[in-house]
Structure formats: C-alpha cells, structure tokens
Length: 366
Length: 267
Image 1 (cartoon, rainbow over the protein chains, first blue to last red):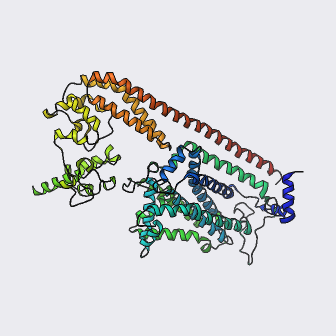
Image 2: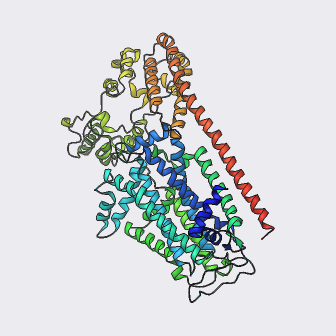
C-alpha cells in the first residue's frame, strides 16, 4: 500500500481534499492566452519563502544590540558555515523582490488588470509592495553599519517635515532623539515579527482575492472583448482555458528556476552590487560618511525631497503620487483594458516609468 | 593688517584642536570657520585635507594642531591644547605624535641630522595637508634633486622596489577581499605592521641597513600572501560552486519549459 495514497485517502474521507485539490489545481482553468507576466506572483512567493528561511537562519546568530550587531554580522559572514551564503541570499533576495514587485505591478498596470472588480486585489498588492519597502528599510538598519545608521537617520529625519507632529513621529520611529539602541530594537521587532505577520495576512488576502474573483484574461488577441462590471458577485471563469496544474504551474516553475538562477548569479559573483562600501564599516554616530545615499528603490523619493523647495512639499508630492496609484482602480473606472485603445494611459504609464528612472538616476549621480 | 592677524589666529585655532576628542566632532568648528576663509588660512588647506589619506582615516585638524573642535570660543586656546603651525624643525615631532617609529628612524638618518641646517622634514616629501598614501614614487629625481644628487636615492629605490610592489599587491588583494565581506582585520593589521616597520627602515636612508634587513620583511609578506592566497582560493571554489548551481537552475528552467511545450498539443 502506498503510504502517500493512504494519507491522502485518510484526509479525503475527512476533509474532501481530492475535490479541493482538483478544484484549485487541475480543474482550475486559466485564460488560454495567459502570458509569462502572470508567473511573477509565483516567483515572488518563492522569493518570500526564501527570505523567511534565510532570515530565520540569520536570526540564530544575529544579535540586535548596537554594540554587537555589526560584529555578529561579521561573524555570520566569516565564521558560521555557509553564513556568507545565507546572508547574501537574504540581501540580494530583498533587492530582487523589489525588482519583481515592480515588474508585477507594472505588468498589472499595463494590462489593466487592476480595474474593477479587482480593486481589492490591486489595493492589497499595492500595500504589499509598500510593506516590502518597509521590510527593506527596517532590515537595512540591522547590520548597524555606517550605511545602516546614516540611511536610517536620513530616512527618519524626513518625517520631521510633517507639520505639527513631525518631531513626535521622528521620536516615535527612533524611540529617542537620535537613531540608537531603541531604534534598532523596534526596527528589529518590526522586521522579524510585526511585518512578517502583516505580510502573511495580506498575502493570504491577496491570493484569496485572485482566486475568488478569478484570473483576469490578458487584454490581447482578436477574441478579447472588454466585459461590463457584473451587478452581483461573479467568478471570472475561463471554460475553454488551460488547467492551472500542470499546464501553468510548470511555466511558473520554469520562471522560478530562472529567477533563482539570477539570485544565485548575483549572490556568488556580484553581491557587492547591493552592498555599498559604507555597509562594510561599523556605525559611527560621530562621523557622517560623504555622499550617503539611500538604496536604489528609494532614490526617486530622495531626489524628490531634494528638488522641492521644502521637504514638506516633497513629502506631500510623494504622498499624492502613491495615494493616486493605490486608489487608481477607483478613479479609472472604464472597462477598456487593451493598451492599444488606451493611448492616454499608455503615455502616462511610460512617462511615469521615465520619471521614476530619471529621478533615481539623478538621485544616484547628484 | 588686523584682519590678517585675526584670520591667522582663526586658522591656527582651526588647525590645532585637542587630539583626545572623538572623531565625531572632528571637522565641525575648524571647517566651519576656516572652510570659508580664503587662501592658506582656509580654503586651500581645507580642500587639500579633504583629498588626503588623513581625511579618509578621519584624522582631522585637531589631531595634529590640537585645540577643541567642539567649542567655537575656546577652539584655539592653549588650555585646549592648541599648538598651531609648527616650525620647520618641529614638524617631525608633530607628525611623530602618530608616526612614532618613522620619527625615530628619521632622527637617526642623515635627513634628521641636518634639519637645523634646512634639511628635509616630513612634509618636504609627503606634503602637509594633501598628504597621500605613501608610495615608492615619492622617491624620484625631481624631488630628491632639490637637495642632493639622485644617485643614492636611486639605489635605495631599487633595493626596496620589489618589496614595495609586493606591499601594493597585497594591499589591493586585501581590499578586494574586504569588498566581498571577508573579515580582513587581522590581515590588515599584519600588513600594517610589516609596512610600517619596512618604511621605518628606509627612512633611515642607510643603504647597507636596508640591504641587510629587506629579506626579513619579504619573508613576513610571504606569510601574509599565503593567507590571502588561501582566502582567494576559497572564493574561487565558491564561484565554481555558484557557477554550477546557476547552470543547474538554468537547466531546470529549460526542462520545465520543454515539458510545458509537450502540453501545448493537448490544449
């Protein structure tokens, strides 16, 4: 008797797992013209799991104390077997997650998949993207390097531009007047407990929305027609589609392999891409390194703050831009999703990417 | 005249603060005041210092000139240890506050013995504020010929060139290892000690002594090199393993895509 079959039989008799699996795998049909961009969700899930695993392993030796954090990271890198690999996978992985999150969001935007009835899917995804950035920001401080210390000082300083409550927000973020032990403590707690829990809940909700509403059909091809918003709940079925498993999961698998290949390539051959020289020196609150810059994904925000006459205006403009993006499906209510029929949107989309890249490069070279 | 006097005082103050203060405040008061002043009292030494090896190692104005870089009022007072600009013959002791060993050898050398007669002090060869990482290129015909013929310096340069080249190579290797996250602290300490002792040696400008002792330094450097080679070898192995893993992952991806193609006929 096959043990696995016996176990599944046992579960099936009690929970009906065979029906559940069939409904969500082989019997779950996806649009026939589904494209490669739809695999980014699986890639991101894999990367998150990897972050969780490597982060947990790092926790074994990392010490969240200003006097010991840098030394503990140095020890992980040099004395713990494969510690360097685990840490680099974690560092490089965090950066690649932002790359994949951006690509995922951009593809969803381009194909108009954010439109109703998928507002909640978009909103939860957008919040997840922002949580990803907060993950990076909090994780950035943990090695307690020069870069950690000063980048966090600059980042938390920005909140001071908010009228009336700015100083209180800084004090709350830092746990004191300057970045120090209290800041490290709260960033550490957020990074290893608060954010993962919030992330898990949101990822669950995001996947629930995707599954419940149904995968959106890519707006390409002759047979594509925009559909009206149904008056009551409607699961987007694709009766002539392809099974999720194994037809699409194997494509997901291929992309996961390629994403991991990219991760391993950078980890083994160019980890310094995401580790500036200032990240190699322990934090020195008394010495500000020249030309301290935030990570690449915050450069656009950094430069925005610099080009506005006041930090408040810069922050406000960022808030407006992010708020607009978050609520886009509530503004953009048209049913048309084909990019060729949305010239204004595509123009703004391209301009948005150019502004993001331009500001980031400006921030990098300024 | 009064203005110049005030500026001179300010510069003096700027340059000398107390050496015992944390590096934190290093540049604060000194640069704040003198950075805005013209010429030798301000912008020139400030700009030169910012390009220097001292600036990179956070050795600031007060470390040499004394004074208190945290206090605008008392920054340049004697009570805060301000010593100002040294006389020509005081320079070796000035630099020797940190470069203790080299100073000893310098005093014993011909250079040191003729300092009261206008002989060279440290800054004659190394510059003052724009001081850079010392290299063998400091020994050159133009520089040495300011005081004497180049014949003996050329001999010394030839004698030390192989060891200096080895030092440079090892420094570069250590920097590469450091950049990829290797803890190079002990290697840097080792090399620092060897380099300093070696450079003490040729500050004696005694060709016979240099010839006799250079081999000992070469042996020390070989030991450091062996450790570096071992680390580089480990890194090389990691890259081979990484390359193999990347190939496996790419192969996995390609196989998955091939399997995907077999489904297309049934869709």
